[in-house]
Figure (cartoon, one colour):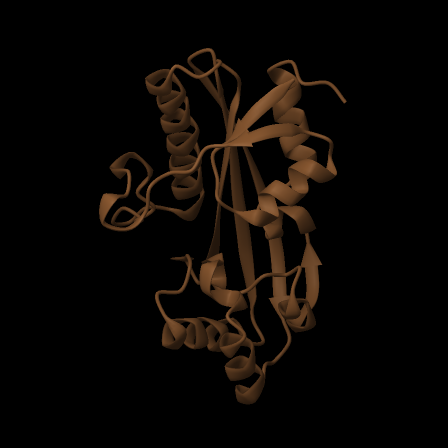
Length: 200
């Protein structure tokens, strides 16, 4: 079975390839012409768990609408969304360099949760799974933070870090799904795809 991946994330593409899933990519518009259906702005008072489910489902369902509009072959549409929860607050991708530095200062020496929601839309029905992981950073030095942010790696990642990159040096404890922290929990994703007929 071939599916569609509604994501621009290279990490999600790598992880799907790793588990043997064949896919084509659906890209949503960004910037001034961005699709309002896939707006990732948290709603006032929205809990992190509700946020990742809402966004992941919205991406899968909008991806299915795009297939219909473009008269493309009907196949399952997979999407995912990752966010951090720290001190009751949703922490998404940094807005700029200063924001990335501030996020990393807040996470330094602290424990946070990483939530990744995965959704699959197929035949007008959307299934959803949630992966929750706990990550603790060691105490970070100011120079480490500045050097890491200057590398550019944190700028497109929830929480301003990628565990699979240099920021792996910051993590002194993790419980949960490593691939979930990367952005696509492969165990949960495989189980979700099996529900729509995918086989190993």
